[in-house]
Image (cartoon, rainbow, N blue to C red; front, side, top):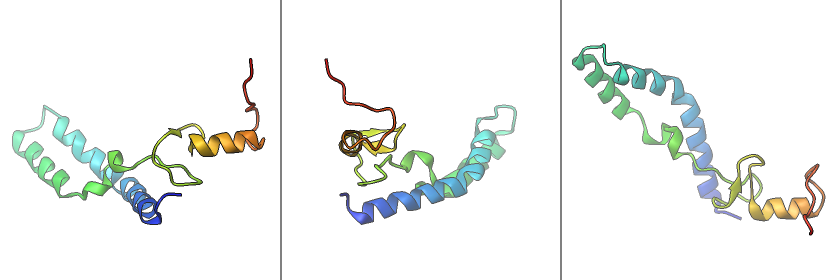
Length: 101
């Protein structure tokens, strides 16, 4: 089980990223628009820098929903490899069977 502080920090980052997504996308569109004057683009860059860093989508870490483990995660299931194997062995995941050859 991961530290609860790390899991809570990641959840807070997810909320901030969802909250700031539209504002961040609008500012990035202004910055990348070459037809606008340089001053406007520079102002948008400064406003983008004023936004909190934890509001960026790249700061969010993919964690296991059950254990909070940060490594070895399957995006499709939102589970780490250890939890996925345990659930699959117990027959909790429909359609997933242990392979044998």
